[in-house]
Picture 1 (cartoon, helix red, strand yellow):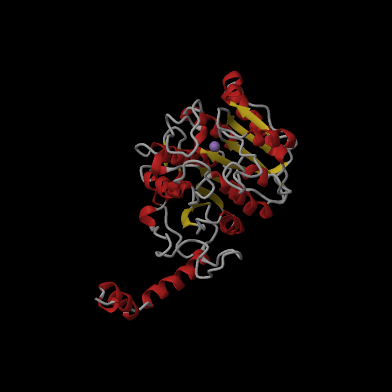
Picture 2 (tube, protein in one colour):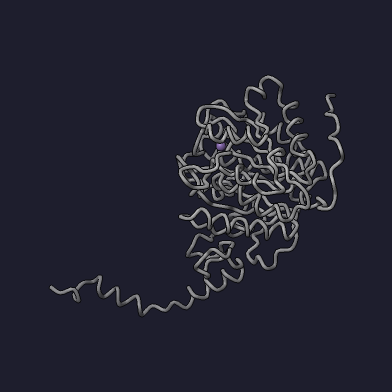
Length: 383
Ligand SMILES: [Mn+2]
């Protein structure tokens, strides 16, 4: 028997006879609709926003967040109030991975929501123009290239003066999410960060992984660490190095003990005050592991003793009250989820934030970059 007699050999040759026309057209069209990737991406056929079915691009209006229209052609993006965008990265996870499926999990369960909320008296569909941009094409094996992609994708949304809702992805995306925002803010950015972990290490295992985003974000000149407030910190799996950096840089870390001692309202009011001090806008970074793993098991580094969902919702209402210039929900890992509860919580966090912004008349896209904040935050209403 000879090599030439093998079925495999015939099929190697057969492939050459199959045309590649439609595939080539798909790639070209995905590049037109999805725009050019960041400079560091060597393969220039990879689009910035994933529209290529040979990569992952698979979204349509049937699978968008809450069924909002799919913005296939990113060249045609106008200035909707809100753009949902996925950053399906899990290269930054140090323990359990799976967050690359986060955007898909959140979008899928979000179909449960209609956009109307009785308690808030808000209908998002009536109040907001919303589109889903699908996912940014991340490079699964290269975290720095993924940062360049996410930075460029998020910057494109800010350029269009819209409010981005970034569906993570592990928490490493916090850095490029803020790096993409920073050039569009004339003034300082405050950051309100819900998490059980400080995420302030310079490196994890020699790379800028998911325990590092706020070390690097607070190196950005207009994202000073004194405007970073962390809520929900505690437990046994945080990094000591991160704590050291948080202390040295003057970051405000609010523990679960603080929340128990002072109450949700006072702690959230303090967070609002610190984040907004001399800042032009505030970015919300919500790590789903800030909620207790009994409710949010689908995450990479679960830490018992976290927030109850109702506690998180109440604090979000307060910290969102003065407006935001963007948000991310990170660390949802559907392979570890049970009955989609973690994805559902992520969708709920997003809708609650949008609902509060609408209720308060403070959508991110309305922030005026030349406008400065009032000298002092009004006294909280204790009534
Ligand atoms: Mn965390």
